[in-house]
Length: 152
Image (cartoon, rainbow, N blue to C red; front, top):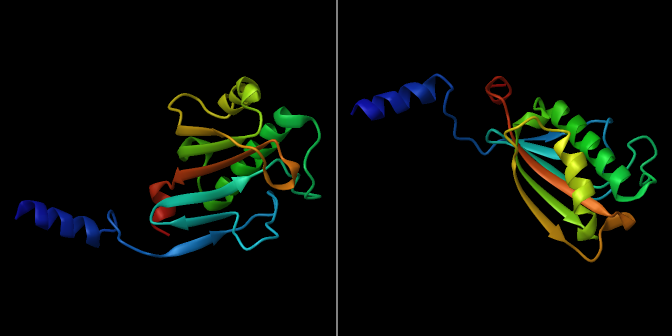
């Protein structure tokens, strides 16, 4: 009975919420999609960031310099999208990396690691044959929204 009362109290106080609500995240600081998908979606305490390739948000062109330059641009795009959602890089709980040349992973790993300070997210890396727009790498993330953002 005590557990039920605590559960009801937490629900009423907004500490626990069950919702199918979703909110689309948009920012001009990251490439705007031209296909039928969103940069990110906030739902049920998480933000789901669509796979990002190394596009410059200003001209929507793939940055020059290969996988390393693309990885930096991707991480900056992800950072901008997360900020627009009310989250930050340290809120990322899961990352999926798609890379054409798995041999370049050490370089990508070094760049990726600079965007975190300990407590790294879970991660999956997949070698692929091809990516959109001739990209060398694509990264998608899921972040947990901070409580102050969840309650809005």
